[in-house]
Figure 1: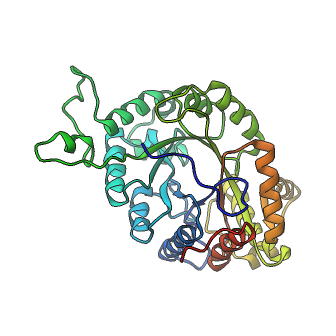
Figure 2: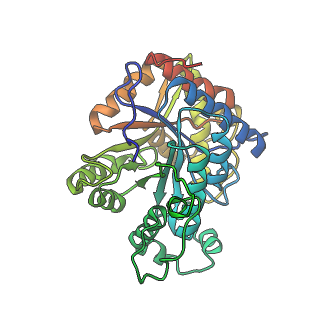
Length: 361
């Protein structure tokens, strides 16, 4: 299997990667958001970022990433180097065979460049999750996650044991093609990551010897306990001989600190609305600046922005360096949530410049 570990570029403390939510701002369409996703992935590809992930969200007007596999197939056509993956696919929402087929197809489109990040949350509200899964027994999704994961890995490796009811079922594209007369199979297969915002997936990833990605960007208080649990639980495997932990980080750079604050406030207001059950499009900077926050909302905003590394490129670099030292993360995955698409693309360029990362053309 391909090496999971990324490569440090320039003076960055770890490999740097990108998480793009394909956010839709006020006055924009999903087409605009997906065009921006192409601009961002091209930037990641050109500037030496290790991977570019998209996340599965449903029933959220301001997020156009309900179908990660479809988006990733499109991004594969616009990149050459950067790894492409899901951050993540919510496993309980789907049949494991379907995911194995989708990501086997992606692996065929971008050989040796595909990550399959898996989560056990629905990525939406309970009613939407019930519609996705055609059941209202949602607790079974989380409870059954280890069993679903084992089944998915069996499909990806095509190694169900004799007597198993799925022994004669094969995920295609996949290894079965190598054992078919005249068949030739790629040596690559999607790399599985477990994602989490609490301890469950941290422990499971450690026990299975898999790489782990923690959602620091929306669960910062749990970051260090979860990473400690992952490392304590880790057992060497054929995939990894030592723990490998990545954290998602909200990070935004602008030429001036005031402009960075202006841009990230749009994402903070969007989170306020989401928390009160009214998700919408990402507001403009002007709307966010004019919004009158209640005392409770202002407390939330202050707490939220305290975990967003933002400011000038030098300030962001210092903030990321400090975060990596505090957590010991092996890789940082940066997400730039803001209304203005040009500003998001420029943020990644500025961060790459701050670390002296190459411009690969």
